[in-house]
Amino acid sequence: MKKTASFFLFLVLLCNSAALLAQTEPESIVPETDKFENYFYESLKQKGIENYDKAITALEQCLKLKPNNATVYSELGKNYFALKDYEHAYDSFEKATQIDPKNKWLWVGMYDVNYQTNNFNQAIITLEKLIELDEKFKDNLVSLLMKTQQFDKALILINELNDKVGKSDSRDFFKAQILSQGKFQNTEIENLISQIQKNPKEESNYVALIELYTKNNDAKKALEITQKLANEIPSSEWAQIGLFKIYLDKNETQKAINAMNIVLANTKIDAKIRHRILNEFLVYTTKNPQYSTDLEKAIAYFDNDPDVNVTLEIGKFYHNKKQWDKAAFYYEKSLKNNTTANVDTNLLLMQVYVELKQFDLLSKKAAEMVETFPTQPQFYYYSGFANNQLLQFKKAKGMLEMGLDYLVNDIPLEINFIIQLGEAYSGLGDVKKKEFYFSKANQLQKK
Picture 1 (tube, rainbow, N blue to C red):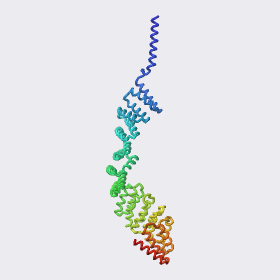
Picture 2: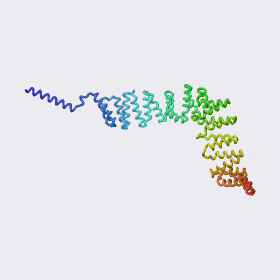
Picture 3: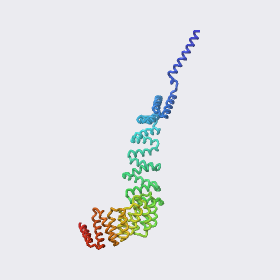
């Protein structure tokens, strides 16, 4: 009986000890692998609801179990990054790369920290490591080189990428920025010449080189390249620049006109080039006036040019050559195309009317300008001059006397005013005042 009771008591004590042991050390029976997975799952759950501190605590438990796990360090980096604790984030990603250096996403984590903290020079070092694993990140390197103003390296990399994978809008934008600084243009010229030699049928390289030479005012080399382009790709609109010059030199005028019209119609071609071609044809037309109609059609391409008043410049061209009728035609056209009244153009036109002895037109134009610009003495002078020539002396006298009130520190114009007043009084029969004004003009001329 005693033996039975003792055995029963032993069983009870044994069971109680087991239960007590289970309560105080619950994890001792859980495998290490399951513990790691539980902590890691917990970290993902906490990160998902943005409890980054709790996620980090769970990951620290993971490290105790697996201290050389790159994934854990990567997750730590992500959570520290979310908390903007960039120093710990960088350290975590860096440790991850030391464990698993072939995993590009770990390097991406380091790069993100560098970029976020504006540590661009370190970001470049990180990217260079990353590019060893994936060359697609070379475009990111271009951006960083631009940010750190390493334009020479950026230009080399841009050209390399353009050659290997094709052009992109972002790289084109960066390249334009670099080339706006003249010191890099020689490098680009060498690159484009090399590209043309490699692929002579690629039009864009010729175009870029022509534009560079044009910006540098090297018209001779620009023409050489357009002629090469014409030989390789005769159908190119840019090739017509070179062909125009060739046809004109050979006096194949109609072919030159056709080429010119193609170039002038293409607004993508640099305005300097288009203006130069028009100017060459203008000079050609002065010697071959039978093509004046073609010149007028060519000028029409520039009617809405925001930068240069082409018809005005052509008017000045003929003005200097004393071809008064043509100068008048283009001055009038310029004024018609531009709704805003222009003092200088109107003065040039009135001077031409004087040379052409078109005093009726001069009188009418001067009267309009007096109304528009009532403080400009030149218009009163031309009105007085025209009316004297038309024998309307009283009207001439009135305009000249009014104009003198606006005249300030312009002795040559004052002399002309006084001479015309003498003419007006002479026509009115007032000899005394005529002599007074002619005498005054002589005195001013002596001064």
